[in-house]
Image (cartoon, rainbow, N blue to C red; front, side, top):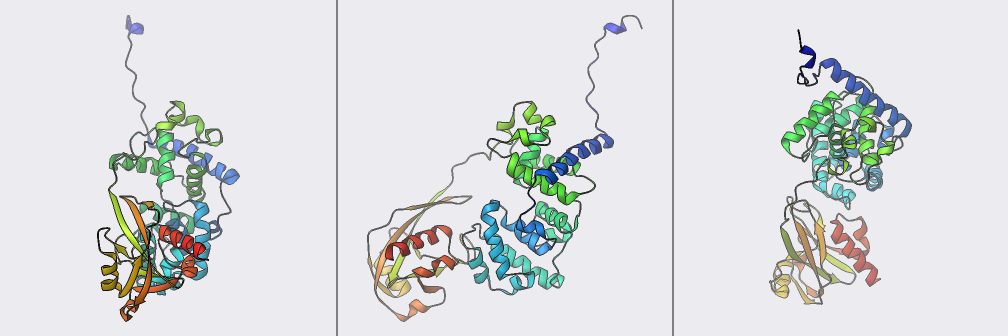
Length: 372
């Protein structure tokens, strides 16, 4: 048609076919698998087993906690609870003792509940398929898929915090990953990129890439196997993807904790079964304006002489910030009801192995060192 050569037609958007998705998946996944075999982590304690119990334990401990911190806890925990039956049979107090210092104690409570569910509902055989795993307390979709992949090679996508960062940068996905709409898109990408084979190696590669190369600050793009087609790198958006959680002012809480001391011992009180530091031993708390001597006489049956307060301790939680005001008190005399359940006199030398919140344990260790 005359003059048609001069007509400028709008470009058509790229059409993605199933074949295109498969090709993209193979390209991305194959590069990660090859990178994992050459450069990935292969000597972590939980990588030397296909036992779903041990793999599950590592995945639970690694939630919001770095690998170097987890390793000694993982090894000590397994020495005490070598299988799911021993964990299920243990009292929660013993589980919390082994977990003490690792933080996020809700994980320990959920792990204990999950172990009991496995014994009660699955005859003590830890599940290997993602659907059954996801029904256990404390195991979500991503964790279930990871356990199934490492235990039996099952094919399923994962999407933990590190993987969200990798995919957000690689595909140029804007928006906070915790936003429901953004997370749904990230899940779609995770599923589309999943390879048909070598899923365990691929899953480990994604985890390792996010933990060691595609880190939040100063990522090592020169070592990344998928850097050349990473949208964030191409568009110079690495620093902005993914954006951090929108900031909001955290509530501030303050509480006085009592150091009731006698002859190298300190009085501890068990925390309630729910709430902050649930089930752990801790120092008794009191509202700052209360009469210390009257409270200790009525609540604990002890006569005390308050001393000078110690320096405040700041501790951050996910949803609030806590300031602890430690107040040492010398115990002059005590009544019998200090031996009630939920109260215990503990030697300061024994606090290292006790189920105590990290800031309380640190305070008492310092106190023991000063007393020694």
